Image (tube, rainbow, N blue to C red; front, side):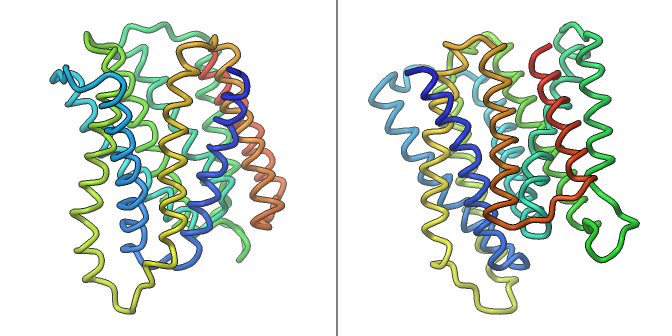
Length: 291
């Protein structure tokens, strides 16, 4: 059963990326659609998470050490989703998703500096390979078919805030109230929903042309459902599977399926530089996760 959940985790990660890519490609210049998407998706996720917690563990405890990292996590996730959707709207799904995973470099580097973790030669090699992967991911001096500077900027911002998401998770999990994971998720999802609720009206007013919000409602709802199950499954797996099994399969499998989806479903070009970026990036992710 536990390995079926592992397969489900990999599949859901790619399904979420596919939903985001499909939605983002419809109207890439309309920012209000991004906020609407996340408003609906995380609103549904927040309601479901709150109901699940109420039925299972309840809300007996909420420490400041849980609330503050949850707030940082929410702001980082809010910005990560914004720039991930903008990068998918202006560039390839596969590389955009990989840049989101590249965020591992931030907690990996922060660990030895702020959390007294060891920094092995393997982690150093992982950081180096990630820099190589980023180099091969973009050709700013290329021709018309080369990745655009705009996409590269959005992808780097996705990497930054994805890393901050991981950093705030690490902050919470190294604190005295690390067991309050359900409360942490409930607070984070609710705050992400509120951030999108506040920014959506302002983005809507700035739109110069009519925006068809209903056209993306189904994708937003489906993504909300994926977020619910994906996070619950990963919490279960993290507690029951060894890192040596869980991390390589979940991350490596997600990368492989994302590549296949980007090629065969979204018909994205797959050049030599892209292959090298995926190869070095996948190796880097595995090294940073295992050592």
